[in-house]
Length: 172
Image (tube, rainbow, N blue to C red; front, side, top):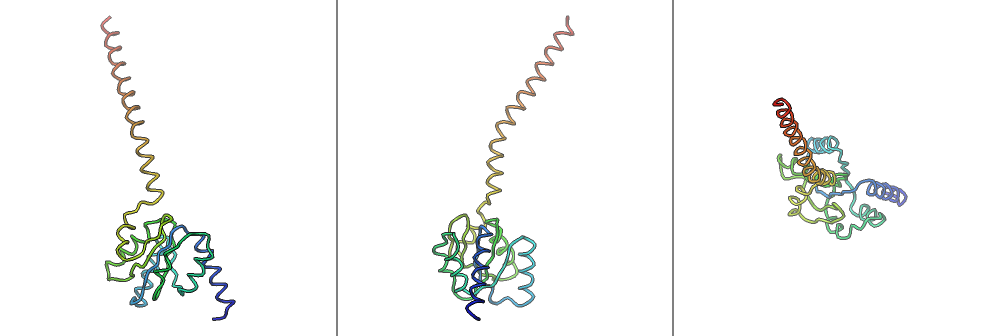
């Protein structure tokens, strides 16, 4: 591969890193063509971009990006496939779901929510991480709950007061 081709690939990888908030490194060694197609199809359905990259080119792209992914380069050994996503826990769930058929893809590392996770043992933690949207939904639910209680108490109290007044009016 010529130096100009490598530069173009690094530039494209750098722009892809900038376009997605979360990056997962996996090892897909051992997948046959059919299983690889199934994985790519599943990634496409879940809006996860899957790319097989050369470790040195991806490392150069990480260095050129504006993100601090220090430590993730430890996972760049052997064959690497990169999953890009804008939802933090989605690729982890996808890996776990796909593994029901076998042990591949192997989880190598990830850059999620501005933190680096290295090693197979971190996959469960990443599956349970809530996405930004899920956290916002939880906060909104917590904020709405007391408001709903107050509104329902006022509405039920209004009905009770209205009932008492109506009964008093009918007596007179």
